[in-house]
Amino acid sequence: MKKEKVQERIIRVASDLFYRQGFNSTGINQIIAEADIAIGSLYNHFSSKNDLLQAYLAKEEFEWFKGFEEHSAKVAGPREKIFSLIDYRKKLQLSSKFAGCHFIKIVSEVGDSSPAVSDFVKQHKQKQKEMIRKLAGDYAENKNMDADLLTENIFLLIEGAVVTSTINKNTDSFEQIQKMIEVQLP
Image 1 (cartoon, rainbow, N blue to C red):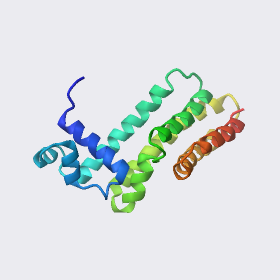
Image 2: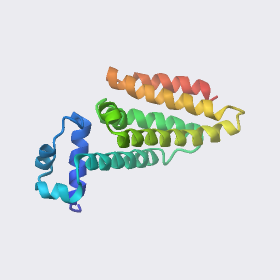
Image 3: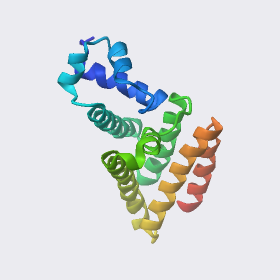
């Protein structure tokens, strides 16, 4: 196994802490202690906790899309990919023990106090929506359907299922939206 670089370790530890206990509740000293580094090492790689937050968001975004690509690699067809996306979001909820979406959590915590974070999260959700738009467009093209409406419906249903799943600590909402989307994708 290759040795983890200091910068990667800092981001990994900070990511885990930011997700588990929140950005505002995570101190630099805790990150330094849990990453087992000197304070100088942290500041050699990140000029501030906010820089570390940006690295966390970039890492999570990269892993989100890479994870979906790997999850749906063997799935063919836009309809099947849409259902694979639902399954992927359900899998993320299960693996996090229903801790919720990294991006929704961070924007709800720091929101308006950090336009950079707010903008990043908006762009991330827009990228997710564009991915759905491509799948919905490919599907709707042959079915004489409104791809934009289909995109909005699927996106909002999935986002709602994630939030509901986080609140209820179960995956029932994913089964429900699967049925709702099946009706929209004849």
